[in-house]
Length: 243
Image 1 (cartoon, one colour):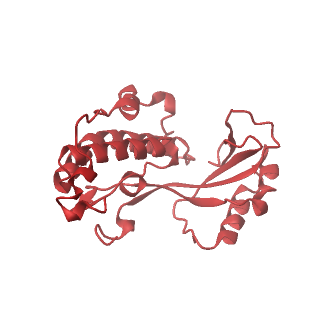
Image 2 (cartoon, one colour; image 1 turned 60 degrees about the vertical axis):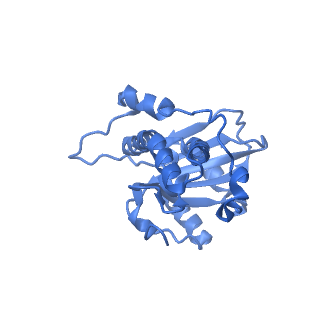
Image 3 (cartoon, one colour; image 1 turned 90 degrees about the vertical axis):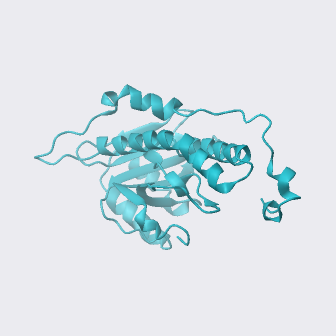
C-alpha cells in the first residue's frame, strides 16, 4: 500500500466465498478429493486429503457478490458459514459438526490481484501480492514458485540492477499469470447460478485448449548458469549486504 496505493484498487472479487478447515478423517478419505455441488444454488462442500492421513481438509463455497468479511471475528465467520450451508445435504452436517473444534479455520472471498506493474523502484512484488489467481485456478503455489525462481534469476542476470531485473521478470511471467487468472475466472463463472434471463456460463470442457496450454506450459525457465549471486557483490555495494 505504501508503494502502489490502497490494495482495494487491485483486488477483483469473483463472487464466491470459500471456507477451509481440517477435520478428523472419519470419512474413509484415501488420496482422492471428493466434492458435492448443489444444483441451482452455487453451494458446494468437499473434502481433500492432507499429509496427515488421520485428518482431512474440509472445503465449502457459496455465492456472495458483496460480502464484507471481518477477518478478526472468527466466531462470526463460523456463524455465517453455518447459515449459508444450512440444508445442504450429503456429508455437510457431519463436516460442520467439527467446525467449533478445528484449530485452523479460514474463510474469505475468492479474489484475484490484478496490477499493471509488479514493481516500483527497488520494490518488487511476488506471488499472491502481485498476481493472486484465486484458489479456483489451482495454480497459486505454482505461480509463486515459478515467480520466485524467475525473479531471483532475472535479478542476478541483470547484475542485481532492480529496474532491469524486475522488468525482465515481469516480461517472462505476465502471459503465464494472465492465462492462469483467466482459468480462475472461467471456473468462477462456471459455478454461477444463472438467472431466468441469462445464458449458461461455459463449462470447463469448452475452455480454449490454447489457454489451458498457456496456463500449464506458457513460461520458459532458464537455467541461469553462471550468473552472480548477491553475496558476490555485497562487498562492493553496501546496499546488497542485506539481500
